[in-house]
Length: 140
Image (cartoon, rainbow, N blue to C red):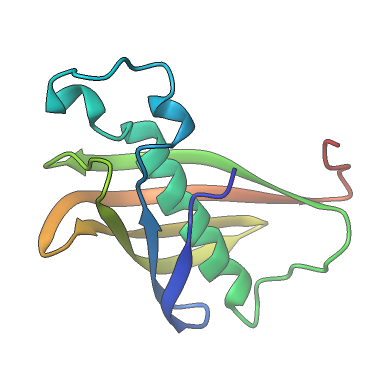
């Protein structure tokens, strides 16, 4: 499931700005009946963190020293730490991820940043961690 629509700006291996448009037709809304209070349509925090993580992996892969061989490499979300959510996002909003790549150690990448909707910051991500493992078979 791809949760990044576009990379708007990229400083390879250092920082990026990416966006994800939230649509009312997202799978997370399919089970909700019409007419619920607005707060019931808040985009799930787990999907916001996953979207940010996907943007962070795009940034990691853009770096000259990323070490991605293009072979059988599995990327996996490992953890998110120090996440602070200040507001919700809803269908019709566009999430803007501002991601800074911190470093990579032994196939593990670390990034941090902020998530915005328009001029309103909705979250800060203290650290998102992804792991890269070579020689693993991807699920089919």
